[in-house]
Structures are given as structure tokens and as C-alpha cells.
Image (cartoon, rainbow, N blue to C red; front, side):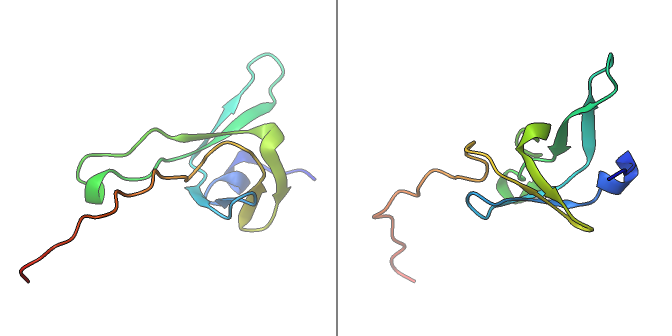
Amino acid sequence: MQCQITDLRYKEVINISNGFRLGIVTDAMFNAESGQIVSLIAPGPPRFLGLFGRCEDYIIPWHSIKKIGSDIILIETDHDYGVRPPRKKGFTVTGL
């Protein structure tokens, strides 16, 4: 299969290990000597309603890619993409 880098941009990346949607590919990293793609980059999640920028970008190694479809890229990795720490329990709002 041959494709251009513009074909990879704007495809959604989904981790099939946990079903998490990482977002849309915005960039790629290349090996300057061989010209091969090393990893894809998707922007990290927004911080507090998007007012304080974004978290670090997701860097997806090329070897994690399992399937490239017409609009989706499926990856499989044990990295904790999208796993958020559990919320503290016991916090309740009263008096409403």
C-alpha cells in the first residue's frame, strides 16, 4: 500500500487495546537518514475546558499501528493513552 503523508493527516486514531480515541493525526516524525515514518502525532487532550491549552501530544510509534483504513488508524499498545486517574469519591454538593 502506498500513501502520501497528506493521506494520513486528519485520520482518527483509536487504540484497540482499550477503545480510547486519541484524536486526529496532525503531524508525523521521520527518520532523516532513511526517510521512513517513525511515529505519528495527535494533539493531547485540552486542559480545563480548553482555556489553559493542551496536555502533551500523543506520540504514536509506527510499530504500534495495526491497520490504516480510509478514515481511521487502529493502533494496539499497552501505553496508558487515555487512562485518567480515578476521581476522588465522597465529594458531594449539598444545599442545591
